[in-house]
Length: 437
Ligand SMILES: *Cc1c(COP(=O)(O)O)cnc(C)c1O
Image 1 (cartoon, rainbow, N blue to C red):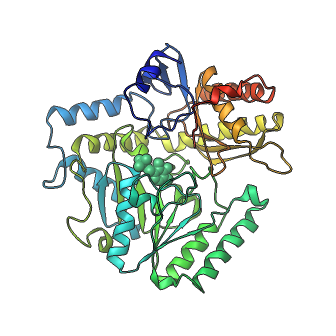
Image 2: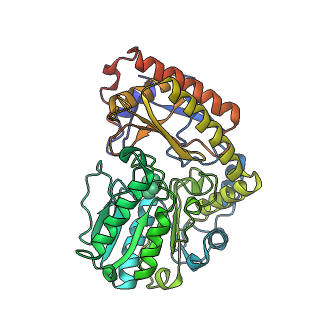
């Protein structure tokens, strides 16, 4: 354990910790972090996707510097500021017509989803919300209330109904998983959950913390059709996988749907805290002073977000993410042929999951091995974490700027890490004190 990591444990609370190995960093540039032991770490987590442009991107640094050098206050609560207005204007061009109303700004995916959950109920007068089992929409009381991730401690909203997210791998067939999930919703609508009481359905276009589940073709179109029939709003939580990560600007575009409300976060600020909700005026302007925190709409964070969006366009990062993602997926599928541990490799662009199983036929989750692979990869110089309702899916969400050679470098490290774990060369005692989730 490094000096910085040990010092932290004597001063910093563990309540926000989600630790997989004793990582302590003192700097970073591009796709690499610098450990306090001087090691260069290839970052395939990007702080859960927040470092969308990698570390210390010049566009973000310049934008932040400019915004701070003549600072237009620190909030949009009681005055307009230009960066937040420019950002709202830009975001309105990036969503489907039906969502093109108004933009709300927050600090995090959590406050954004909490605001949506409250606003759709207040604005429509409908008390119910649908979300998916395994869904992660945030860590505040109101966002946990509409989530379905089993690792969370919070209670669910009284009006929440969780429905199964189709898991093609676990069920053995994408089509069967899709049909079962749709039939489940239809059954609910015909019985316990009157659809005219449902304000909104929250979707993750790829269910990331639930295990990087890629929805079966046509699934969300069928969900959307049900929603349109009953006047239910479709909310796409793009917090982790939106903004180019999947090889399309919005991740819902892969599903051919048009959500009413789009939620952005994580990578929007390129490392600074900012989130955004984009939706129809009837919802977004249903009341004033409804959901705000003091430095929401901060001009510095807004300027960073504008720089992120401009850089994604200027550097063609959506296409770059698609290309690097193909390289990664192909490399991981090669690894799958060599390592029986790898049950499934799935994803879109740079949102990739590698599901580890103890035997392929039975698809038994290999949670401890996933934790050991992540730990071993860190020792070998690659940062990635694991997700999933069974804690057995390695998650790859590198910065959008990752290049082909860095993708290959990461695959090579993962190859070694998985080989070492399979051969029993990694001591399980290392995991003591690293619960992950
Ligand atoms: C991380 C995440 C959130 C919560 O975002 P925070 O910035 O951690 O509050 C919400 N939804 C999804 C899909 C996420 O991945």
